[in-house]
Length: 139
Image (cartoon, rainbow, N blue to C red; front, side, top):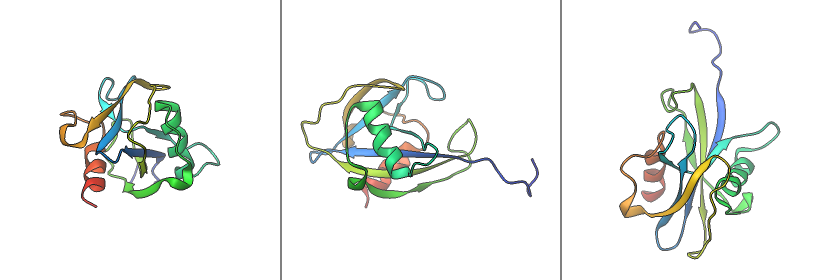
């Protein structure tokens, strides 16, 4: 590929689901890259779908937590060329406020799902998800 050729970009959406007590919902990835690492729920935006709708769908599919798309608040866009070893991925991240007693069930693409206190996150998060979490906690 030359500098003048258009780059292939994959479009994804991620969700930071937070409880009032300061816990964040993470999934343990069940596939490469970063297999076994903790990550925010998220995934590809399907054809004809908005990133907000994809974020709500992925949250439900991966954790069993349903939040209406219109209740998601956009945090920002992460587009570093090195953020994913598979190639160029651009993600739109959203925040979701969920009740303290929200039940979770690991679903598609997730080995497990778990609430983590923001003050005691896993040492390593997949991709640039630590950066996304910092953007939420400092805003």
